[in-house]
Image 1 (cartoon, rainbow, N blue to C red):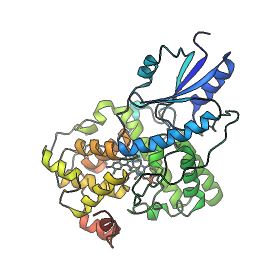
Image 2 (image 1 turned 120 degrees about the vertical axis):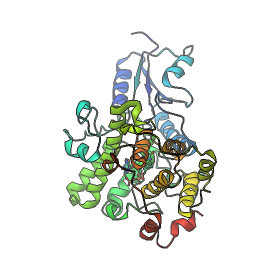
Image 3 (image 1 turned 45 degrees about the horizontal axis):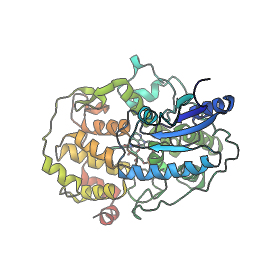
Image 4 (image 1 turned 180 degrees about the vertical axis):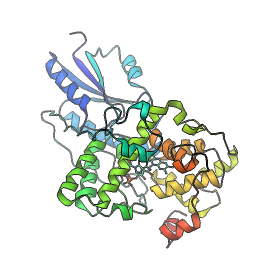
Length: 391
Ligand SMILES: Cc1cc2nc3c(=O)[nH]c(=O)nc-3n(C[C@H](O)[C@H](O)[C@H](O)COP(=O)(O)OP(=O)(O)OC[C@H]3O[C@@H](n4cnc5c(N)ncnc54)[C@H](O)[C@@H]3O)c2cc1C
């Protein structure tokens, strides 16, 4: 066989050992190859923009943990954050002549279109009802002889102590959080009632940052939800959580379906722009100085921690579009840089929805939905806990 016996596994932004079909293949191939050894390459995925500061911190934690686990099995991990896999391999040509290069793929519930692309719906409700298959089961981590799982790193060093996501990004921490939220606390059971909260670690699962850097598999989450439902019944909390994971899936497949239109200013509805390109107003908004205390508090939290509750994100986007009348793509790009869980398809899908150019059925032929912020505060932050914390 050609090459120096090295089997390279390009992680492509999937920073875990659990549920990685390509890792199983790579291990098998390394075992079959005379003198075969495995090398992991953590470059920049081809389609991914550079990660922002908060997500980079999380990524570094996940990589440090993986490197320790892999070192025990004599598997080196090379990190080339500025280079795609192809560029990294080209620059290593003098030192490395891989026998094979395999690549991981993003964690999704379905490996292939759950609804054929020619019939893929524009609206989530049709997606959920039209699913033609069940989500697929996860694979366990492969046997890398001698590998000892490290302890979860738990609390993250260097983050803002007020953060609603005070966790390290590594895989053991992700799996521990999954067990805690599903089985160890009342989190999942009460999820439907608490999910619109704004402060603290327990109002929602906090799975998204782990999903964004690939240190947690969405199929692993789904399987644990099924196990919970078998043991405790399909309550409202667990059903609602499944629905939210399907929203993520809907946006991932929608992006694939619509191509560039998905991220374009007119969105999948191809609507003409209805905004003002006011750079000064935008700059003030990014600094948390946009003039509305509720929104400014959200921006302050976002910049300090990278995390925002779903409710907070909705307020910010709605205010950005309806009150500030700025181009939604500017807001989306800023979020994509700042969010610790930034994911282009999920972020754009939500922004376009709220800007009235995406998959919100109410906006087809009409206007974007608008949040009445004074009423929202009364409902979700009556004591102004969030506002005071981040003013
Ligand atoms: C303007 C805006 C931008 C957003 N940008 C992102 C982003 O870049 N990355 C991201 O992961 N989520 C994004 N979301 C969706 C949502 O706000 C976050 O997924 C959620 O707040 C993360 O916290 P959690 O994991 O505790 O969520 P939970 O409420 O515990 O939900 C569990 C999981 O379901 C999925 N989910 C929940 N809500 C949504 C949703 N509205 N759309 C798609 N999937 C969802 C996520 O994977 C999440 O981790 C955005 C929402 C808005 C309104």
